[in-house]
Length: 284
Image (tube, rainbow, N blue to C red):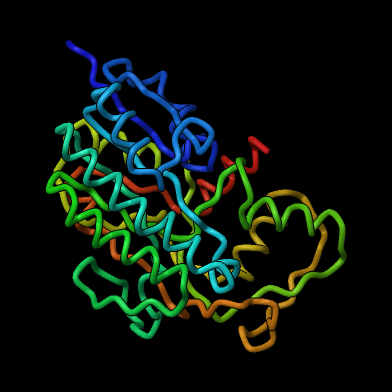
């Protein structure tokens, strides 16, 4: 069988690193891993040249501006990477006949809906980050008819900067930390997401999907589980969002993603968040 070429952007981030780790399990695909040093996705000329040279069948965009609070003071940078660059990738992938897979976020919702959020629910992002990601979704769909968008939530792994690594570091330094307990969602292992992406790439059905691990929790309970699995004695004090003034960006209060569509379309069995967390902490 002829190999298909996949270009992965954001290859040094959490998801890109996990895709790199499992690439060996997919010999029918030839992976080209790029980060900003190899390909500036905000530069349309560079993207066009890369795609014309590489002739990929797929682009997996794992690149993003993910500093939720930072985006409030750097809106131009957030929109450049999360929106305009996505439009460039979509348009230039379509030009070479490639399919496009893009990662979005639960932060496109405002958190006012107390039910698990479906792909058809109304978006209303509260933050610059959420707004930039929503515009990226729209530009992706407009730029390439063969597009898959996956909204995910609370992504973590043993790579990069994320909540799990931050909590483990704080837990080893302090006796008590304050963590917000009134924002509800579901953590997602970047390893699990990477595996799901490869299932989709193998037999694509284009469109918009929600993916997280199974279960519901809040940040404080998530932190407690990280401490317990890491063998750390640090106490987690549950606080409200109002008591945590350091956050510049508003966040959705409730953003559980309904995963029926992705499970049914791709016959996915999704693991509970606690099981995935345990596997990542064992790696750490």
